[in-house]
Image (cartoon, rainbow, N blue to C red):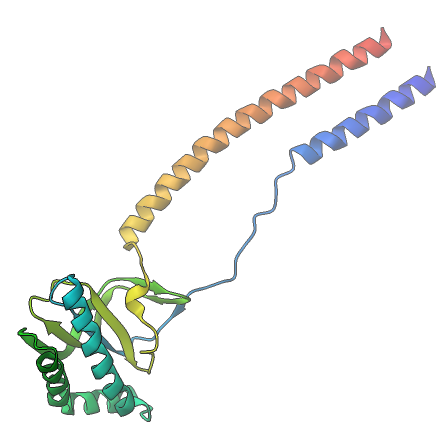
Length: 218
């Protein structure tokens, strides 16, 4: 009788350990990756095309290449945003001349404007760099009606080898919060279903153990 009791206790302990492993919650993984935020002390270049037609977009790219090539040489030796700002302001007429030369060469009759001011930008994610929405200091070149897709880069510090226009548009903070709330609600609902299923399974296991033990004694 004692051997049967010891065997029974041993089997119950084995089942208890197995059940504990089944219901053990996994440890949540954490990520240390954080997006890199470019400092606000950056001067950008933004070019707005007249429209999204192939012709207007091609013109935008040609003006981009010529303007970018010139300005990159101006700022490559500069070490402060104040010096870059002063230099760019003094050479705005040269940028206008570059735009006008490209328009004439391409035989395009379009109006244009070149401004250096605070320009509104949406939130953009490019690689590990995130740019929050806001007004940033920038050279803004507007071609024609300026209703086409834009191109932009960071002139200072020199980052115009990156085409930030191809980055990913990021939702506003309010949209992100609403999405997070919806995801949390869905997760809670799923958790309730899982909890109910686990509870049912646990009751069934316990009921099976009781029947099995009673069968041994009987």
